[in-house]
Length: 270
Image (tube, rainbow, N blue to C red; front, side, top):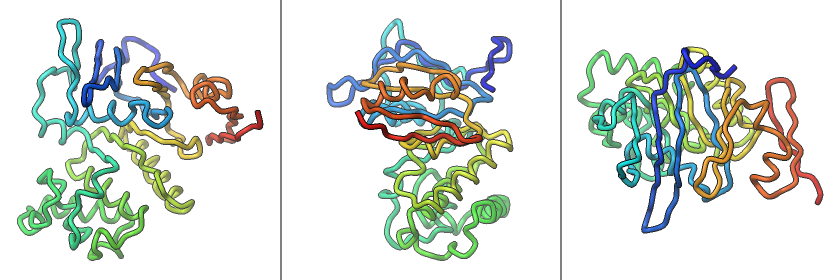
């Protein structure tokens, strides 16, 4: 269940009256929200609604418009060192795959998480402690047979698992994922979903975007809906993942059903 007691709520990110412009176009408008420890959050919304921009505020690659009435805090700080952020939050964004140079092997990619770059040379200077962490991640993410393969020779699912392993090298308590299930086949989707659910059982909190209800993690206890740069709904899955709410959001008639701990969206004829 989502935390309900005010006494128990502890935010790690706080947004107050946040606006974001990109190329003079307003992408996010008047964002007022807290992201709290103990929550696994899925963000849903149509393409172009501002979901990825919202996540990029968290890794400081995008900055909001500053005003006397606005504030954005990470770990209760308005000004925070980017290395402190990287040690506390692991990130996966879609464009990361394109930043990896051809010829870089999977092991080197994971090791590059310690340097904050995609520089394969860093793996030659890692410490014994860092090497042990990498070896544990390789086992946890079932990458043993692939570790000497070139990154760009891997399947989408294998690349995704490698990039998430890279995001976990500092053992962060938070993981922020931009469409981790995009373009995955059924088997790869299942493996990634299962691995992420295991992480949440180890006290990892995950914030992620997905476009399919079937990919929603069973450990998810909060849903945020974004449309046209605005947060339009926010609450527990059983209250937000409703047929009418999602039909209105995506402008399509959809029947939302829950089977056990899993969600499905079934399109209906108009």
